[in-house]
Length: 249
View (tube, rainbow, N blue to C red):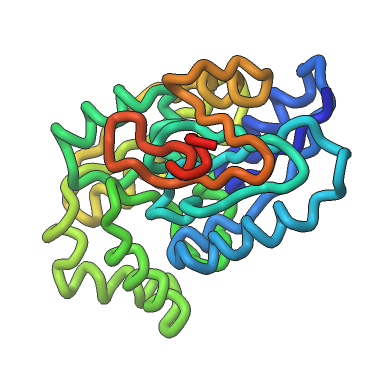
């Protein structure tokens, strides 16, 4: 079986580690994480890459995304089946479970999440952390400040305006298991101290990402979209589904 893994670059180290040991051939294609700040543009980019896939080359196209502020809503592939985790964003995939992330979000909605790949792959947005839930505004403001004034001045402006403290209270570092990534905890701890946040460490998990790449696609955790079908958000516990008219055909 030959698979295409089209993914946000926040999963680069994990994806290569899993693919190297996989029985199937998995071609990995990374997408700039900065596109998360512009969901409509990210959707266009993903659709363009799906449309460019050669007919018959892949048995399945795996997406290293969740809904991601509806960036994946409406996507389709005409040449192969799409498989995507039923999550709202990448954080749940990093933790290995939507349930774990949902519980954390309910208890601590004001959280910035840090992972080794996200930190070391600066991307077009210059950000090194993921915000909780659908609140993209603060990261967009920060990215604009970085572009206009540089990283140090952007940090100063956000702190002087009290923006970080108003919206967030916690910095969580998710370790990358089984990958051997550099230890970025000191950098994250420094970010937390300067913003007067709590610093928390959590163990990451490769379970969901590994099952996605290896083909363990249970219906509860993964949506399988046949060629020509379209993904649609459900605003329900299953997060996403196939567009209704296409389900009834």
